[in-house]
Length: 569
Ligand code: GAL
Image (tube, rainbow, N blue to C red; front, side, top):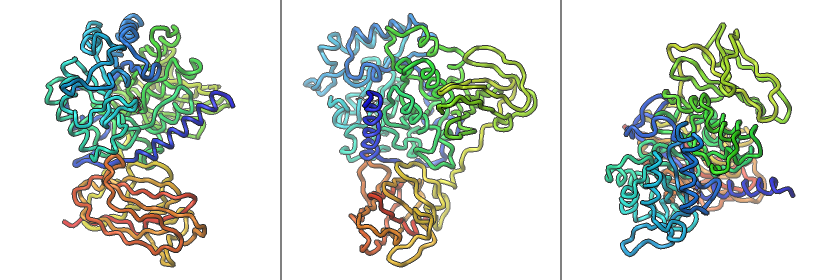
């Protein structure tokens, strides 16, 4: 087996484990944020996607004072700081195994003999900002002291060290007994109490912070598990933000939940760690068009000029940092070829034409897909060259695998209209009376997508011989979150295996308040088999923001028949 194949298998196993352990979501009161609007957490931080460097992708836990100081120097000497990369973030592995006698976190004395304040001072002396990693569980993912039940002390300690950015991870958080919304509210409270402006980055493996209101407490949130330096992983992570891996396809990705002060984060960059510059460029172009945080993850001390040129490409970075803050979205996806559009502040729009397929391809963008018509100026943003005027369309010719063109189309003027976001009433309970879950778009998912008003084989839902017109048809692992928005009083459903299933495997239905981290199980059917009688569910769901419906089975068909929310007003 080739090393690369081995890595792929490991990556897949890790992704499955992460999704099995962690599943989530929930919502917030009020109106969901739409592109271009200001966050509820309106503290003026991260008005464009944060840019910087993080130690994890290249060094994992093997960090020390020398490496970090050299990296700070390299950020300056390479021109990256001046290109916008200001946050230098120390990921997991910086701390000692024990807190001090007063319960405060301390730096690992072997790795950081002068302590964290000294590191922060050095970083600040270079006109950079200081970022640090912690975990909201009892331990970090590397089994170092987590912040659970030390929240206030830790936020005070970080502020005293001059920390400007906290990446807050979620390993072991499922034993906190807190919903994600409760957890992050605690951190936000204590960060605010320090009076220091600190960016909060939610690292929760992509469990739906866009759904349960991450923007109320944080400036960015992960949409995926960990990224690895190969294209399958890069494309997978990109698609958690731009595709339907984690949300109903009607949303066309998560773009409508991003904007100034709150960003979808498909994980940190592997630019410079990929196999070659074609891959480095494809990865960087995607992150730029998706308005993703640009946290470099390569060894800056030894990067080649070509990698440096990719990371500092001025016109490409400008697309990412555009003040309008619209996350680019797909306007075409054939499986192998994709086109993304990102309307910019100055009236032009950025378009990425990308060939993921193994065969060379021509890719054409027609102006009608990006709100334009007639003759339009086109500029190549990587080559920094005007290509002339094109009427009705532009074609990128003969793009090899991972080949791309990133162009700017149009002229300065009134900003082009942003696409219409999915309205709230399509994915939340907004009305009094009855709302069938199958009439709403789910806001988060992992595993299979349920079928609306059909069993998973697209036939009528049928349990114990009784047919149902409404409901969700599931197969195997199907986990979906619906947004009740604090509006519903009761949730009802009838659950059981579908009559079309004739095997002897079992399936299990569970309902959680919000997410897996909170571990608040509201209903558990236990294992049900073909002979089991249907179970009626009637739950009090007052005050619940999001409801997570989990079906698990092995080659089994199961139904949430007549699943509905009732709002009494
Ligand atoms: C993971 C996280 C990574 C890195 C690592 C450190 O949970 O997704 O980005 O921070 O923990 O142990």
